Image (cartoon, rainbow, N blue to C red; front, side, top):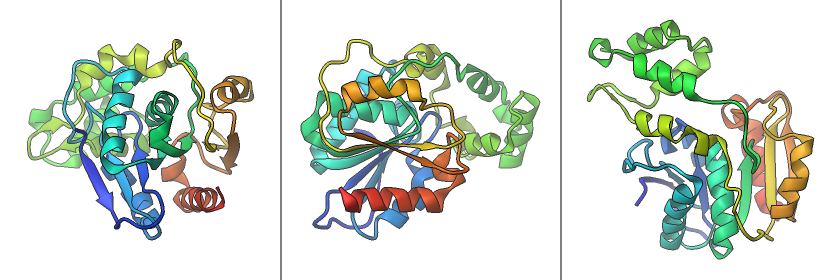
Length: 254
């Protein structure tokens, strides 16, 4: 079973399951989870090969969806919010097991294969000499030397660093091997998800494009689209107030 962090208590509203993206964890979503837990119970998970969840040799979206289905069977049908890789996994579980997903929010991702790769970031993390890391700033400096120019990304990556054990809470070798699957989307996926679905994206992001909408609507016929001004791919971290308000309003309205 995946590691879970639970916020709030059960109410008469469906729980909200939050599913993080690549290199993330349930802890990254603490602010969003706590804010939204005033009206419903919020449960955030660590994917396999991330955080405190088990390490596995495979990382396909069918694998991730199966993991999510086990959580949903345990907590009962829930609203699901997934970001990036977590959004793709959430889409797959909604398509395969629609009875487990009450409503779906997909944050800044589309059910398509992308042409770019995240491998340079894995290679940068692999280059960090953990024996020389005594404090987080040591790892930040090494990541910069390894080519991670964005300070926000360097800070984000080190949130998955276990300083005490001197190890990454990411199964970097498996994520490297499985990167083509992570950047893709299952071509043989069957069915449609007919419940309300929100595709929430950053206005400056290029992950959800107009040309993706036909594919999205073929799989999610009740899809709606909202953009958050001034936000990119990491919309929940860049514009948390707007992100939380939009999610809350949509859940209340639908």
